[in-house]
Image 1 (tube, rainbow, N blue to C red):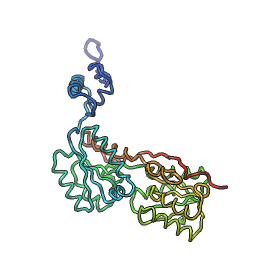
Image 2: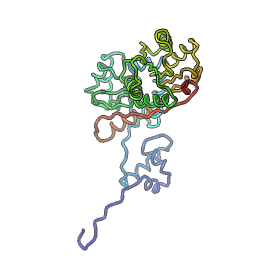
Image 3: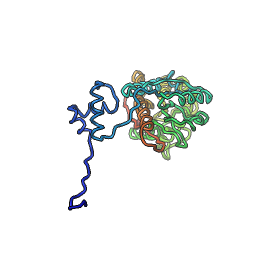
Image 4: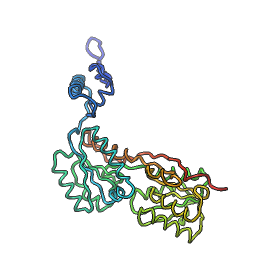
Length: 343
């Protein structure tokens, strides 16, 4: 209590609406102006920032005019050449950078030496706010990042030691979602077609294994040496020759492998989805043109790029926080390649 019996008065928290009311504009306009997004006149933006300061509204820090380096690994470039996964991630990143008035500088790295040189260059450039590494989870390639002083975020990858922040699809839960979907259709012998190697793909195997439970027969796991559809077709053809059709569904760890499975099953005279259902993981637009059109778990590829940049921006302009692993939810896209299991 103050002298004279008066209570201490706590100033009410200033809201975005208060700034908008003082400036005579919408809340959306104030939000865009303070986030340095496009669509607000420079003079109006300056007025909004001035009023926000007068009212003691907490201003977000901006990286407008600065650069972010996107370093694409060999795995990312393979994705780009074969199925355009990386292309969609890049599109999302560029759109978000444009809204934030930042510049994206792309680089490719094929070795730890390339990576060290890139990081040294980025560290010395005052205009570089930070670095995004696309599809990087190799231990040797992660090593040079450990002493980098600027914000660094892994995109479509993860750091097992949790020293670096990362953004990736919810790979394990996505594969579990797909397996649950197939099991609800009555499929219990679900073949898992995969290309082993990367941790993110291993998570997809784990999701299949989790939901298969006692039905997770090791003989139902078919591995291929690359993501090429023709190699997947060869693997399925060989599996049919050795063990016959002892499965009613195929869950592929990538859409390109699912396309190969469709090729092999069709060539063997197996009806899809009447006798075998096939499901992919990625949800690439071109798979709608397959015969039959591919059901898949759709990965939010564009959002991966956008969220990664937001995470980097938050790290660069906010309080120091521990590294975070952000996983984005995925959804089922039902098309013609899946159906109920035959009784």
